[in-house]
Image: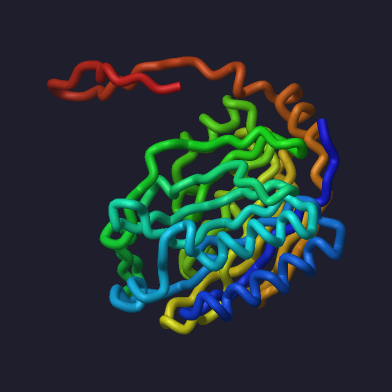
Length: 288
């Protein structure tokens, strides 16, 4: 069990990776200066770019990416676990990945996670998103076993798929992470409720760094970065959409305590689903 200070960094990334990298570095330094030994940044830390041609100009391979290089260097210099919530990376096959990185206090890469669930939706206000047209989805959940805690990975829209978080909790994750660029509309409706639910149903801390405000490409994100304990209590919140840092103490014993009080991870049972009605029998799928 470990006790440490965690920071969630809120940003308003624009189109230019160089400027975003400067903001990223300043906010990470601010968080470390407040004693955080785990620092998380939001989804698309490197750049938020809507136009296809502009994306091609802004994004590059992992070995040439500015945020990756800066993150590795900062983690080693500051002696922290630095979680780049995600940045767009050009894969070897030329496709884009929405990729998270966790760097250790020596600058080594401890874990990499590619966002699994693509944000393909049409919202009531006319917003339409097709993330799958630009990014290749990941295929593997990731839990990093670190000196601070076992940390489970997710990115933004993954939040709406509880089975991902349950799988990570069953693999021992005590801290679940949801760096995001939630739209303002969906954030107002569901951000707090879903994050608290993921914490409660898994007996885990949830740390969610967010993008916030009006971005250069025209989109508007919700902000309200959160750190939540395993009982669903909000420990820290950026109650706005401006860039900044929030800090909270994480004691992984509280995850063990919550799971002991309500052992739903152990009590889960497989079951079938029966669709009843005229001409209907039992469906043979199973869930747990």
